[in-house]
Length: 104
Image: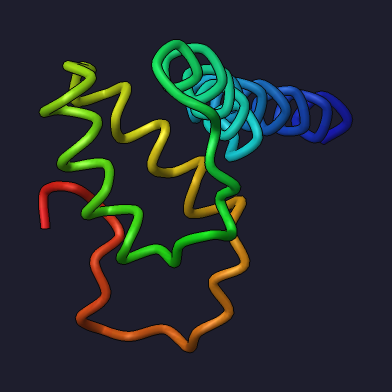
């Protein structure tokens, strides 16, 4: 019995450590999106305050600007969009029809 408890404890610790390494944290996604926004978007124009548009408006702008004009890869556009949507002040209630991704 004395051996089983430490073995179970070690197994739980290893499992949770592996899970935390495999899943990117929101702050990691935001920082990558923010980095891309500040480097890629600033290379052509001034940066727009994320609060200037709501989540739906950012989807439309990133579809047009990110893929069309700037020629960003899909993954870059998604990371920038996630950053802009998380950094804006879109305090509107959740709308089931609300677009939060470019593929919608």
